[in-house]
Image: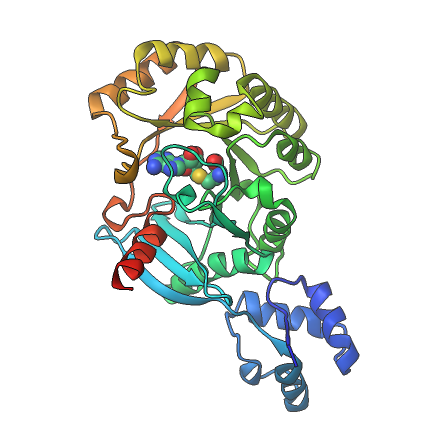
Length: 352
Ligand code: SAH
């Protein structure tokens, strides 16, 4: 007999799932609190439930199936990376960043990615499958559990790991709503950032969802020719369509849109490109996040030197565009998208 996994359900869904076994409605919230706040996944240890109920639960349900396969902790102590194994043996990455102002977790939404961006390690093997809401939640909660042992907890979320979140829309939105629940992480929607390669219909759907999350759009080039070379998705939704969707999102939510721009030496980091980017974004409710590219040896892409990054930023600022350079964390632990997973899988293949 296959058991139903409760992990990833809302309290209401848990209540409905366990009702046929005679558990009262309020048990839904009680179980959700054990799973999502107390990080207990063994029904026998849920001591405020009657022993009989615990036995029934263990016979018919599971409480999460994700396990940790590898962990790396950066020398700075502020960045950790977890490689989590899913029930079917596939693996996903989660990154935890501890800042002065709180902790942020970067979750993956798919195993691999179909987007095919030229600089990204997540997409090297294509997409294998979407993650369920529970599998995405398990990543955030594993990081939370790790922090709880150190007297802290997760304060914000970035949906920027492997995968295209808007290509797995329903599971991602369910995950975001779960994280907001008081019986789960109780996160404010404003503490959630979702990053997309520019899937326009998904951006519009999210704008109508009534969740004031921060939208980040990966731009990486100021013109269609270069953007198509770096991001094949630009053929479907070119720059003008993506920027118009960003404006609609800003208008619907009142939230400033973040445009991500990975600086790649000699490819998209020139003064003229900075000026073109400034011209595109001027007057929009937007921020630019400059990310010196994490070199992917397979693709031969390099990051510009610090002087070039500074100069690119200065041109944007002079063009009246809000811009910041992303602080570098965890580069000694292959924290860039998809790099740990890729390294572990490649090592296993070499062993075979
Ligand atoms: N699919 C989504 C979210 C995942 S990628 C998206 O495209 O936005 C999260 C961010 O990391 C994106 O801006 C992506 O372009 C960027 N990224 C991927 N590989 C990178 C690399 N090697 N160096 C710097 N940024 C990278």
